[in-house]
Length: 114
Length: 114
Image 1 (cartoon, helix red, strand yellow):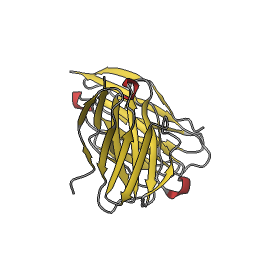
Image 2 (image 1 turned 180 degrees about the vertical axis):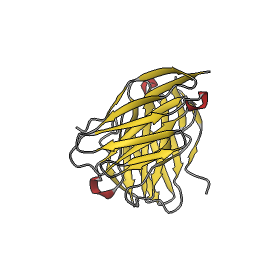
Image 3 (image 1 turned 60 degrees about the horizontal axis):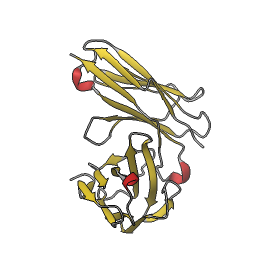
Image 4 (image 1 turned 90 degrees about the horizontal axis):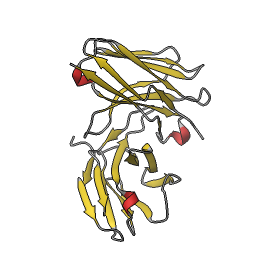
């Protein structure tokens, strides 16, 4: 059974704070690691797809790093804003059968207070 | 492109009734996924199809659940008979499966079984 763990489960920060959270995944049979952003009452939207050890991706104030050897990825948000409030999901892709099956973590729910 | 389309958006039904959820993937995508979101278990994969063929249905909770994909542009998830514990949000997602690629989620169907 593949395990994808995210921590913390939830996070409350003040507007302007920078924050980060962790996704850990199996270090064997790695194919890709995905990050999704999921706002309340909406559907998950892809943020990043990361494939290479040492990869670093950035989109505005959000960035992510990847360590495939030790099986973890960090997501960073610089200068959090209330609109960043959402659940952030990571998903592990082992490239099984080349069908795109993802194993999702339970998510980190971020609440940014104005 | 209209994105992944799901219908209905909300369904309220009585225990014992048959429920059919529908999904139209993004044109050209050849992988389709059905997920269920609950407070207890988060986002869990029920079944996925590749080129209209079911690849893995190990996430389907019971025989009461069945899914079909008769062609590349349509899939159904059926629950018969429905039970109150089936109440959840059901998401459909599609993926072009150009490696690696992100999944595009539909808006979800909120099912309530009374």
